[in-house]
Length: 253
Image (cartoon, helix red, strand yellow):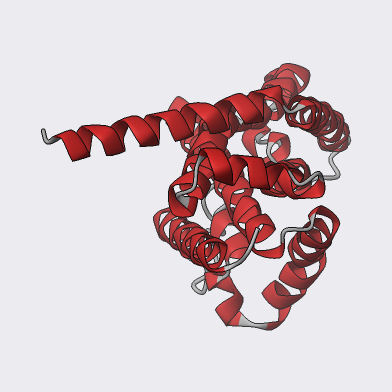
């Protein structure tokens, strides 16, 4: 291994360590994750109560327990935006760029650090609703195989992680927290659902493709499969991060 390669490796490791440190020391990170978990449990409890009364149309614990994910994703969207926009509000980005002048490396390290933090948080959030629903429904729940539970929990976890990274990329492009949050939440909660109802091509958009990872529509020939949804969502994530890195390198701080 050449000296230059070792130096680049050390620089990348230092950049990742620095971004992890910043993310861990940001109070908003833990407040957002804790608030999201609490909201998810409240919503899961509400959906479970509806299931007990027969209002959900299903008694499968995974279906009811994961219904709250489509709402709890808002917390992960906000976290992704905060991760990339927080440094712009106080001008800390200039200090960051002095310490790490290679912008592409710095922003890539930020997204990787975010993924490291978000993946376990997403897994806990996804599992919490299913566990709560399983306990409350008890013997009234439709039997579910461990393989199915593992698949849908993995899909929901990956979905939340991808959405966080997409939101971070959009935040890096917009560079204003409120504007980025409004754009993303407006898309996920208003524009996206409208498009799903009106256009078949909406199945290729990130939110609709991502839903297939944990809530596939078995009876629809126009829906993508979980594997296709994962590939589409991964492609959207890579594309948006690449666009954010390119824009970051070309713009002033």
